[in-house]
Length: 189
Image (tube, rainbow, N blue to C red; front, top):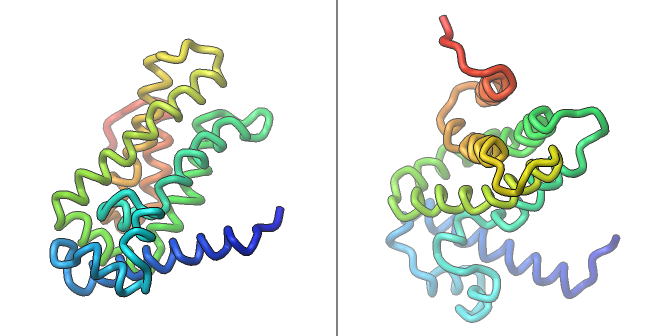
């Protein structure tokens, strides 16, 4: 499906705003940058900025809206015979590891880790997806929508980005986490 000119222009504006915000946050620090500064740097009005983002924290995590749908799709659209845990492992490898390999990830992590408002927003952002992911998992296994095992698996998967932060080998960390989810915890030598 091709995207129309209007949608492409909206997406370009959104990306320009997000790019300007991240650049300013990394250069000056989160608390020293105002919404007006970001709007000016992106050459848009503050009204336009707020049409694309709910607030200052959302500017840092500009891909949040797509993540929930991608997580749910990983469960619902997995190939026949593939387990939910394996589908989620594949999804995390594909998406989280791409983020971990970004050349600015160390700067981004330092920004988030060094800004209490961003750390709190990041944790809330991921936990917002827990209900949708849990419901998708429960539906796939024929469990009730409030199934505790489905909720636990969803929560564990959503904590992976926080666990990966600062790891020397994020791919190995992802595999360790999913091995734990598949076979249970055992102390490692």
